Image (cartoon, rainbow, N blue to C red; front, side, top):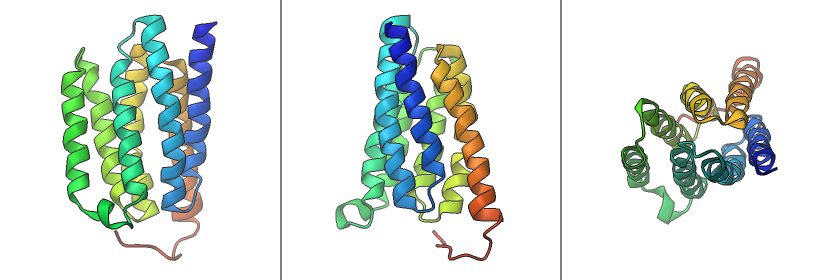
Length: 181
């Protein structure tokens, strides 16, 4: 029963993740990512408790991602505008990867988190989608190895959602109002 709940929480995160990239505003993309991160923190902790898998790296990095998203969604406020935050989250992601290192695949989530950190710092939704895309294959491999069925499905859904959004917003609606950052 706990395995079913664990995967169900992950699948809820997958759904929220899919919806995030279908948003046409940066704040909504990041807002949905905050909810998805919360769900995946719970998912990876449960996965680690029930399967003994190296899922704590996923939980730790999702927590960092959650914190990062909270700061970045507020980067119109004075306290969150500083580019120092970008550096802090890149360094923290790398350090977390080192501290939670288990095997060769442990570097994949930190690499994914660094990519999404850079993308969410951007103000341009097109750049967010394009820079975020390569993070999904990193998480996909990690999820296959750690046994996160919901994580594998999530990354397939995220890659599909990103492709759909790129086509909807970036290819078909060329010439729309774009922010350069």
